[in-house]
Image 1 (cartoon, rainbow, N blue to C red):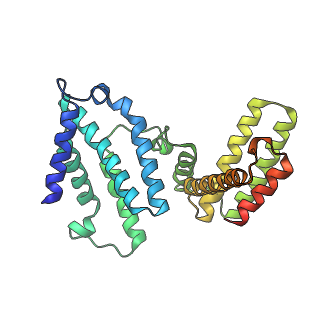
Image 2 (image 1 turned 180 degrees about the vertical axis):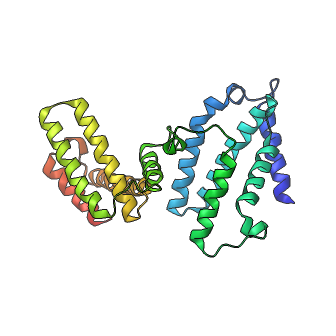
Image 3 (image 1 turned 90 degrees about the vertical axis):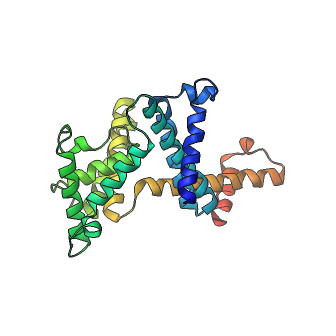
Length: 262
């Protein structure tokens, strides 16, 4: 009962923020379009909290994501399109429909059969919607580059367009790296951009074949770089040195020290 009460309290607060007479000027200016970047930002902050294992931060970020749902629902309600309850009802209906093995008399032999059933149900649901441009039309074009590449590759693989093993991707990776080097040597920036894109796409392909989620792997690498670089800055502060005035040998020594400490 408390969860229901707090949900109603949240929606009441959001309605107050959007009140034309007494609401918040910033909230009143927002539209679905203007809020869209915040949806992505809050989602990434939630992922960061989850991956660092910070439960209190995860709780906070889940709330920020929920706020985005509440705001978008309120805006839609003001335009008499739908409201928060309609969002929840649509989600509940979809979950029940996609889990007949839980909510109906359907039995799957194993996880693979369940996954196939899930895809069949999704295809049935989407049959009444506008048909996207081919198999890859189902992949949103505004996804982050690594995520979009992964989804494109997974879709293509469903019809057999894929490398048979990771070794083939490794060979392709070496080939793409040589093409990057050639483009850099020629000084053709357009071609260099093109070849670097191919190289990155192939790296995503390799990650997929090795069972590594590329977006997560890069976030882990980003955190590691941030941690080590900040350790370099801290060491300089302790020693009374200016990081920006160090030569390459001193910077490398600092970097190796930071690496040795994690």
